[in-house]
Length: 331
Image (cartoon, rainbow, N blue to C red; front, side):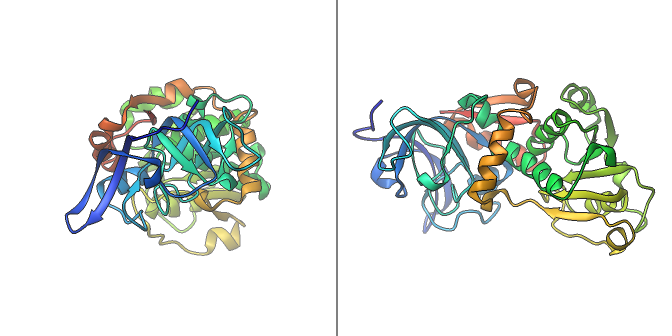
């Protein structure tokens, strides 16, 4: 392996006098943010945040220009940090990628050693990026619930936005961890897909339609990727001392609810902020993802593979809610 002597392809995002734009261009290592290790990228992935950044529909990047892609995995080709050597397989998710520093949509990436995770035993580079930020978020939600004493005995875990990347991986991860999982989705035509990855029941989103401040307890807890009325209804239907993790706002950032689930049933609402996770917790979650929580259906959840040039065609569909499972980016 060797560091490129000249230029290489990267999907770069600009916002200047010529407007907001993104696309594949030739850059060099000198164009990349500083860091202790350089990797030859093998894979990245597409997350909702990537689609927002690539289209300008969300204010994700804090400086321009930057290479997009909040996930990256590959092999080290150069390192000034003693913890990493040439040939080591590593991954990074979040940690400022495609926000304050250049991300993973590039043939080479320069990374901060403090956030680089040695590829966990039990995962290939490809598998690590089918997981990516989506899988890490789902597993972090379970980690937070376990910290708050969630057990399968509380009852089934509900997953809203179930056909998306986080939702699909959460179903598989929760199932691997011993939970019964109920998938909540507005896509009735994807019921077979959801049961094939571990959902024991598939419920229409009407099951979480906004209702009374307290409803009959039907879930032990859950993971919400949607926000708004669905999150409020999930809280109202959670059993005593169950946990609901909030990880997304695909429908709404608002939450109109009451304190009743919290003070009558002791329900906990847990925030899941994957990008800012401490290194010790990050390492622990990735160890789980490579072992006892490793999804059993990664190849089924990976529904599409694309290259850098195809990214602009994928982003709009994801923002419109039309994606299924995970999209792997092959560099």
